[in-house]
Image (cartoon, rainbow, N blue to C red):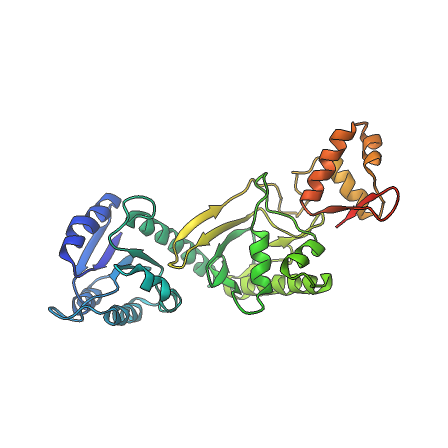
Length: 351
């Protein structure tokens, strides 16, 4: 892989950046100012750019962030926006964070502070993360060339950024004023103690969004979000994504399908966490196998309108009260059922 390095500090380039790139097995060209970088871009092609935000426009000139942004625009004009990823290097990381929205708009994939960290989010780690993101973006972009033949959606990456949520590289929700879609996805991305995506009934999910939200308002918000996802996947990626392919409610309760992988990114666009769970849902959308035979029987009975008590479960399966309580407690914790105390005796019902 060939990398363009734009850095006006010779010591940083020769003593740090060169060592990192050599360790990763990458070749590089070096420019110390905007003019030299444009000369190299005219004569070469690159797989990645490492750009110091504050650079001189010419040899001997004063380094300014404005010149770095000018170079970035010229870089995208030559290479095509998004075709070659860009990492910004800066000694003023807070400024990079403050400008994160602007930098994202002009095609910056990630920022890293100088001096470079020696552990954790190192320069090598950032390069690897950005190139992995870019490979996924290229795969998604490649599918756009065949919109006439829709492929069935079979899962993908749900990336949470500070200002947007992307599915397979395409934005499906933004951090807007009303932002129901944004908040629904943030609630459903959490996992329970068994590593599964949480399940939330409509009443519970509505209460999480707003204490006075009606269930019907929540249902309409879910419907709108599903429609948005289906439209984006169809029009932008040529994939047929059904209403329950990302957010399902098979077996009661809303939840993310297990073929969704959640990634969390910071303000600078760097991957900070990834969430994968054990697979349990097949392509046919059957109820996942985390629930045992007794619990699936309980859900089936309640779906038919049966007012079920703990003693009914004990008698049906000839189990002790402690086992029945545990089975019912797990379903209650998942937000699938609730205990109605208004009658005597009390009974369980779907939430």
